[in-house]
Length: 123
Image 1 (cartoon, rainbow, N blue to C red):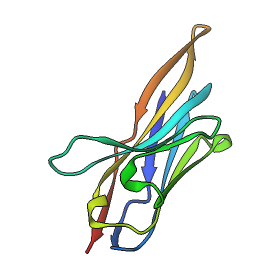
Image 2: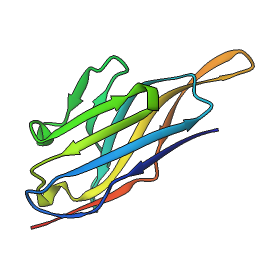
Image 3: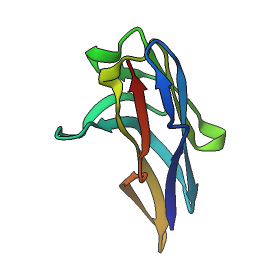
Image 4: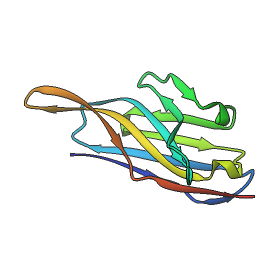
């Protein structure tokens, strides 16, 4: 069994900062890419930022220069530091991880999602 759990969502004023955390636990062999997605009311879920196991990052244009993704491979954890928050950043933020598990001597890679954490930015 593998679990992915986010934390850190909150209500913050525009211009403020928040740090989201996401930890994966369970029978994990390794984790490939990890990422953060968000979904605002009435909109589709969209990629915010992603990071490979080697540390290569990718950001949505709307958050470049304001958000920073990082990870601690030893803790199976990914972080999202969000600065200069805007009202349009309000959304439920979801963590995604490509996790390798093993069953009967075979390795399997699956996409795992957390349940989401609410970020609300007041203007």
